[in-house]
Structure formats: C-alpha cells, structure tokens
Amino acid sequence: MLDAVVVGAGPNGLTAAVELARRGFSVAVFEARDTVGGGARTEELTLPGFHHDPCSAAHPLGINSPAFRAMPLERYGLTWLQPELPMAHPLPDGTAAVLARSVAETAASFGPRDAGVYRRLVEPFLPKWDTLAQDFMSLPLSSLPRDPVTLARFGLVGLPPSTWLTRRFHDERARTLFAGLVAHVIAPLNGPATSAVGLVFALAAHARGWPVARGGSQSISDALTAYLKDLGGTVHTDFEVKRLDDLPPARAYVFDTSPTALARIAGFGSYYDGYRYGPGVFKIDYALDGPVPWTAPEARVAGTVQIGGSSAEIDAALRAASRHGRAPEHPFLITVQPSVVDPGRAPEGKQVFWAYGHVPNGFTGDLTDAMERQLERFAPGFRDRVLARATAGPPELAARNANYVGGDIASGAVSGLQIMLRPKMTLFPYRTPHPAVFICSSATSPGPGVHGMSGHNAAKAVWRKLRQP
Image (spheres, rainbow, N blue to C red):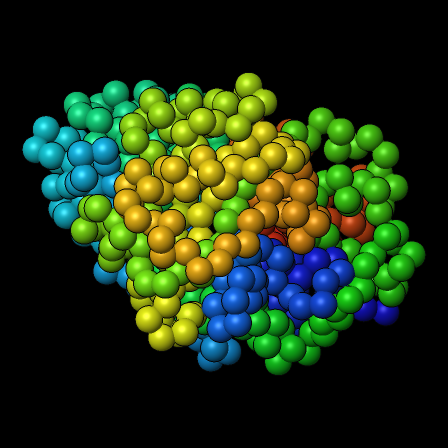
C-alpha cells in the first residue's frame, strides 16, 4: 500500500508529492493529461518553433516561494531569467510607471509627490520579506508565524481594500499601477485584503524580480517531476480519475483539483456547494514578427506589461466581468513578453507574446478585437507584427485544465472572505469530510499562482495524519 496518492500534476500536486517523498513516504501522482504541468506548461500553440505558455508565464511568486526555494530545482533544469524591468504600466501620455527591482527607481516613475509615499509603504517590509512571505503564504494555521509582529503590521496595511490604500497617493500614475497589481488575482479593487495582494506583488518584485523560466513554464513542472522521481516517487499520465476506486490503495489521497471535481470523485455531495468561482479570462497567444512596438520605452524591456489607462478604467473592467456579467469595452490586460529575455522561445528575430483580459465566468464570446484595440492604443502597429494567434476563451481554458471552472484561472473567486479562507470557512482548509482525503489545489490558501505553497501546506496536514499511530 502506498502512503499517499496525489491526483493532479500541477505545481501544487507535484509540490505536495515532493514534500511527502522528501520525508520518506511512498508517493504516486496520477494526471489526466498526457503531460505534467497544470497551470505551468509550455506548448507550440501557433506556429512551429514558437513556444508558448498556455497559462502562467511570469513567476514573481514562483521565485519567491518558500517551498520552491527549499528544493534544488536548479539541478533539474530550472533557470530563472530576469528581464531588465519586472513590469511596466504604459499610460495614455506615452510614458510608463514601472515596477523595478529598485524601490527608488519604482518610486521615481510615480513622480515627486508619490515617491516618498511609495518608499514609506514598502521599505519597512522589504528587509523582512523572506520571513513575511513564509508567514503570509502559510496561513491559515499550517504553521505558527515566525515573525508575528511584522505579520501583524502587514495585516494592518494589507487587510483594508486597495481603494483605501491608494488614497495615500496623490497622482494617477501610482494608483493605476497598483490597481493593476491587484487585478492580477481578478479581485474587485474594493474587496477586503486587496491591499495585501498589491503589496505582495510589489515586494516580490523588489526582492527577487518577476522572472520567466528559461524555455517556458513547463521547465518548472519538469524540474519538480524529475526531483520527485529521484526521491522515489512515480508519475502516471493519461490517467483520468472519476472515482476514488480508480486509484490504488493508499493511506492518504491528495487532490490538486477544483472542489467541484473533488466532491464528484469522492462523493462529498453538496459539501463544496458554497464555493464561488470568479470571472474567467480570454487569452491570446501570439507569434510575432518582431517585438511589440510599445510607445513607452520602458515597456520594451519589461517582462510583464499591464494595460489599463487609469485606475477607474481597470476598476470598470473588473466590475463588468465580475459583477455585471458582460465583457468590458476596455479590458484590463496582463501581457507577458518572454522573448525580451529568452530569445530561444521563438525563431531568430521573432517573438512570443501572451495576453489575457477578464470576462464573465463561462463567457462564450470573442474578446480578440477589444483586446487588440487596447494593445494598439499603447503599441501602435501591433497588429502588423502578428504572424499567428491562438485564442482561448473560458470553454477552451476549462477543457485544457479542469481546475479552471468557467475559465476561472484562479480556481475560485478571490473576493470577500474567500480571498483568505478557501475553499471553506475553516482554519484547516486542506482537510475534507473523509479523514484520508485532502485537497491541495489553488482553491486552498494561499490561493492562485505558480508557487506550490498550497501543496506544501497540504502536505503538512497529510504527513501529520500519516505519522499518527
């Protein structure tokens, strides 16, 4: 009998498997698709030789993940590549606010009235970032805080809505960039704890940047898989699990799946019926005949580029998708251009480019024109560079990854109390009604992103169970 079986070979499932195998437990992973990866994959989606990331592409939480940093993933082929700028946010006047590795450079891009405001906001936390990240990403009670005082100070700043925090800024440049940071988790700007979301992304950039993985996000999943196999674990692909009886006997079962799928497989009935899924996304992967022709020079060297003309425009786009059930006229876009630092992702002289905008959950329309109008607004002539595009709305995204219910790449709404307590209002979110069944997906704390911490935290709950006499 195995000690543990993990269902789903995304970053969280693989991390949970590695954590258990490192502690001497026998582990097997079962994945429905023919390759591992979940939200960290790389595929030729457009033309031969163009290597795209179907979901996550830039990894500020990955390089800062306490779980990943404790593993020798570089021995297994993972190399982080840092663009000259982690992120740029072009503005309608042709300039850009930036999120740089340097706090001073970032603050200077906001203008003189807000430079000091920004420095006072982030500098107190930066020297203690590693401990703060460990504490913040380990909540709820998977471990006791290592620095409760700093965590409490961060909570005082981070728990209010981001709209409260941005009142500290005098000018729109800083407000717009910060609104874009919050929108990465598709959270309404006035929701609780959204200030913490923006601060975490900013601090992550200043601490270790917003890198891409050399060769694509698949290298993260492949490194985790190779490490797991060296530890004695096994991985089985092309194995769809429809019920618990499909799996071999084990002392524990760990699911890197949506709560909906877990309830169906494990027969939990209505246990997760209160779990809410959030807006979906419409994503386009581009093969380009050269770099994106950004008007703002800062955007040309940034790995990630946020597109939203103002904080009000970003807020309107989020509200349209999450509250009004319609596609926004001026969508907020998150774009990643891996080729600025990883030219091997495309044939010589060409580039890969990645963009998505928010749409209602289950949206079946086409956002391509609206997205490209936004891109042309800040990069005139963009359409002339397009060699090929691969579009994926919510139905296609859900077909590729069953965790993305209705196209929700966050695996659950990041709003209200669910921003912290997910998938149930409990301090022990990795447990389920069955004592031998656990959940470790992004539907659990600390939530979405390629960081493995949901898997790491769930593994703690599992090994405590396995060590019981």
